Length: 207
Image (cartoon, rainbow, N blue to C red):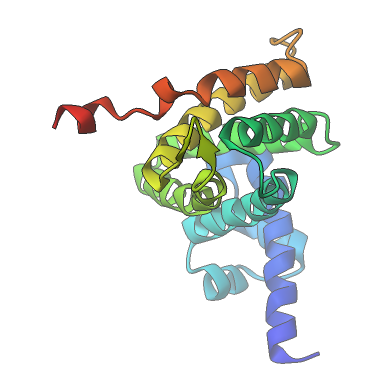
């Protein structure tokens, strides 16, 4: 095994261990337990990630990356904006039925709690999430809508609204608080957002 392969193996082991420990303990998570689960030392964490916060930020990026890759596959080119929003919504609802959906929800809630306890970590997590969401913005940019083409700024506004909608709805589904929130319900809600009203930047228009 080469040094690069060993480094990647250790990185993977620490991220997998961190997912388990951080999801359970949040800001109380101990680096010693994470390292022990990975069969490594805390020195490996500092060497690969720099700090506990660095590990958590890397964990979030690692968790979100395949999620956004799957979205890109679920929303093919050639769809107009409303159709793309519909496809995205259906993908998001199906993800609520995935075997690891509850684990993902635990991590999501835990990270919110950690961000509240540590503003510096919160800022780092926000930056990391915004970086990943660029993929979603690019997914909507350039699609046709009511005779025009969606700009990057418009796609960003829509992505923010859809993310807020689906995070709330998916939490409701997993916690049993959104009875009747079927795939069609998600799609209808997304289609209603992908309208001219949601894409207009009133502040920009006023200036």
